[in-house]
Image 1 (cartoon, rainbow, N blue to C red):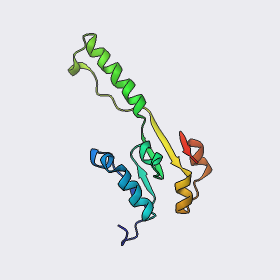
Image 2 (tube, one colour; image 1 turned 180 degrees about the vertical axis):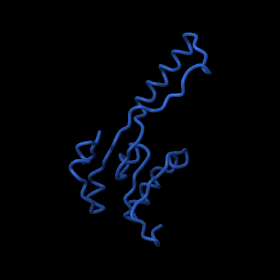
Image 3 (spheres, rainbow, N blue to C red; image 1 turned 90 degrees about the vertical axis):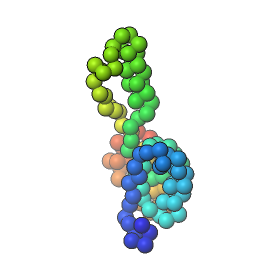
Image 4 (cartoon, one colour; image 1 turned 120 degrees about the vertical axis):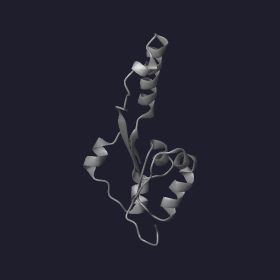
Length: 115
């Protein structure tokens, strides 16, 4: 990726990327590659930006789903539910290191900005 001079990287969400979160964040920082991550924890560890499911909200949805089952609903009769709340997290320190200017309109939409 470095030899081909990529302009950016989108990191997918899976167990492997979660397990190597710190190594991935360190690699993109060392190689000065702007990256979008699958969870806020990557940005809190030094990544640039994440647009991801709000896991706290997702856990509340799961609890409501479990409550329905405990109250007698058959799991096969319950509809499949998709996440409904997402969050945008931006790390301005990382943006500054990469020499990127984050547009004010994007900052205004962010749920969390790390300065």
